[in-house]
Amino acid sequence: MKPYSEYSAEELAMENLFIRWVRFPNDPPIRSFWENWMIKYPNKKDTIDKARELVLITSEWRPETLSNQDVNSLWDRIRTSLEIIKDREPGDSQQDTLPEILKPNNIILGVISMALLGILCFIFLIFIR
Image 1 (cartoon, helix red, strand yellow):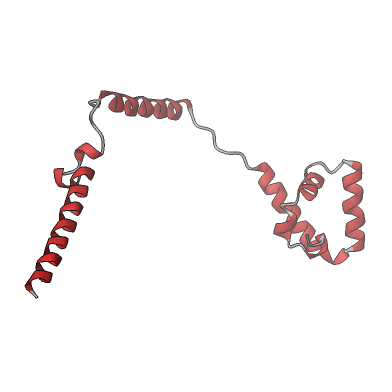
Image 2 (spheres, one colour):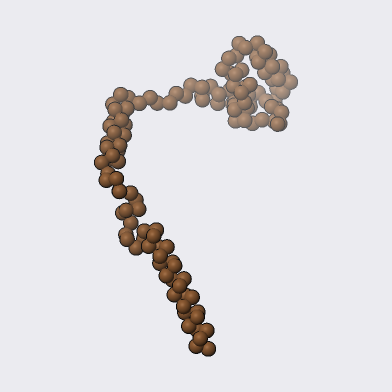
């Protein structure tokens, strides 16, 4: 792990210790650590300021909440989808909608038939020579 002095603002803004200091600046041990760190690395002031701004921006973000109308609309769509699935015939499936020739059993029989035909052709060629 590299030292904080080599961190970019983005990396620093993702560090838990730094985030705690920005969000809870009155926590004595954490405040002391970062104040001493800034004294030791004064050239990192811009990095600290930028990282602090990133943490504050992300701390203020709140996901949008759905309105009651949106929630009800989603539930209606879910119920409708469930009803469609329930109304299907028991034998309905993706496999049943395939053309007859593409069903797995028919494909296997086709492959076996082609293999037998190939073997018969090979035997026929041997006898012709």
